Length: 230
Image 1 (cartoon, helix red, strand yellow):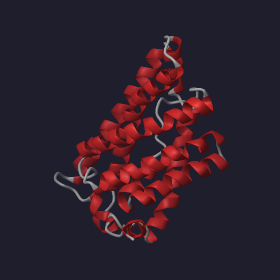
Image 2: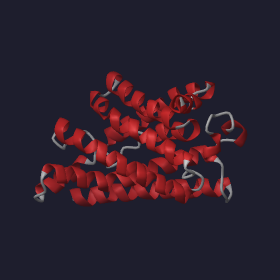
Image 3: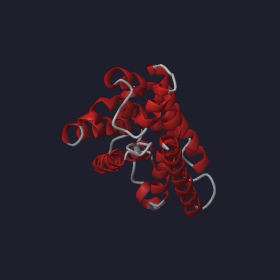
Image 4: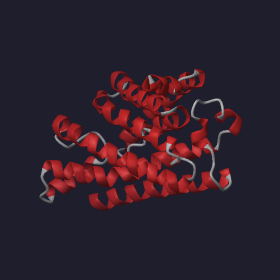
């Protein structure tokens, strides 16, 4: 009964309105990143947004639907990754409930926890379905590690542990910045609005720091990839 109540708490009218918007954010940004072959993903911003404001079950549903819809309509390669997206939403939601989405530095911790989960869940998919080489820019790193003598599983796992922290910290920080830009009155309409309550510091300051750190992380990732290719 407690499980059913926990699930039901995540869903109200605002949740049902936000989920389609979040799916669109995931798919559009994710597809742009794929086309640009960037060494990050950034396809879970909407998922984390829903997970924080609405809860882990709503976040998991958003992530799952994002990859299924993306895979069926635009890019079939996105479909097999829906288990990863599910866990991203679930972990992000519980981190938010645990108070890890109230200041930018705690959001970094959230990103690390999500990254660890995503790396573990995504590795078997990358290895057994794609042979380690996927459509993402991070596959350049995997190819580099394979050429250096690493075995397939080790190369994919190493790539995931290099890329996922950068990607998921940046993703969590962007979602955090979006929430900081929303009014307190608007946030209060969501079922898990308490997750977004500030501990200390001005919202504008938190927003600026979050965006700055996210941008720096993406730039570093891109620089590393260019260096390896060079």
